[in-house]
Image 1: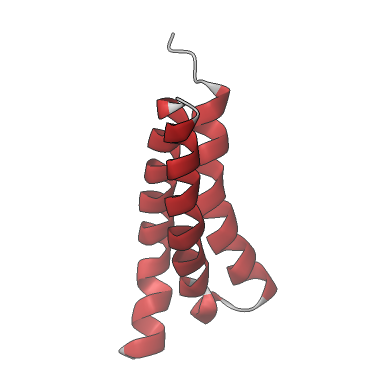
Image 2: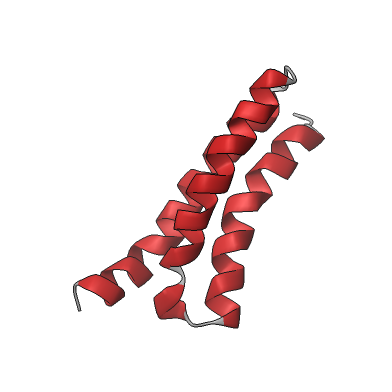
Length: 82
């Protein structure tokens, strides 16, 4: 069994949690804003993680952003194209 590192999980959680929090507190149509916030926060978090020699946290943050992007595709489409 593969043991997940706490650094990876903490980096991963930022993206989806930010996006889903915006979706629950504001509306599903505005959930894409959480992805944009995660992009900015995640970029600096990756720099900090690499500066402190925590590559697993940087990988988790990047993976979390990808998940947040997938969650945000439908709200982004609703907002700008529907």
